[in-house]
Image (cartoon, rainbow, N blue to C red; front, side, top):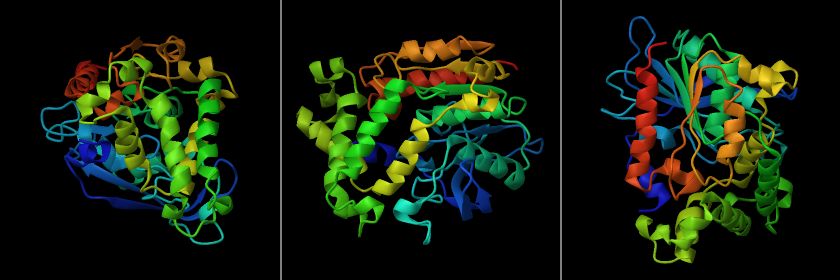
Length: 349
């Protein structure tokens, strides 16, 4: 089962659109006629106090995190109202691929994590009238959004679980992101982002996927040939059938928009560049959840931030799948993550 098939096996919701109008971005540009898409599961109760927000990762969309939604799971729609918001640049919210000229394709304005969270806050408050969230959680770029939520709206977020991500992009990750962005731009048909069609840039997309193959899973994963557990017959089959298969259908400009956002993610902007002060604003009961052997977000990097967060705990999850533990190709990984979220939700706050 490849990554796409695994995601499609999850419960599926209905995609809806939240209109933002002319939306002023943190970089100063205005995204005209902006919108974010979202999905929901469960019912909002009369008190409007049973909501969970679950933003998504780089290259994904709201539907991808439905893997963690279902009866008997931590994000149980029989108990909670789960909101799965999109982010700008994901292809199904305002993005280079669906915005009219002159802001289309390579001319799409720069967006930041703050822009996503401000838009999501409007969705949560204006569309649903929600004033508190029982949990905000997300993986990778979803963790960046989780941190921004808990820092920007500390009285609204009761519990937070950033998974395999940081509040401030590290120098190592900035370098990695620059590398995989360069691979996308290296395609001979890229044309400064004004290519004729996304599939015309398949060379750059394949190069980009190979870089992810290097960093996405740890060295022991390859030594022990753990890709066999995912149904792959060789290392090359894994890289092609997993990473290339995931990225090839995507639009390079959309990926670049999200990548730049990830690269410039920094919640310390809330406190004039003081990361300790920013993380110190968090009032939520927080489980900070790194994956052992994650080559993007090593435990040491994540723990350094966790120590700055009041009322927080570090909860390391062991898996050979490294950063991609969240995709749960090993069902045991899914249970480990779900158990952490369940424990956090059971804590009285």
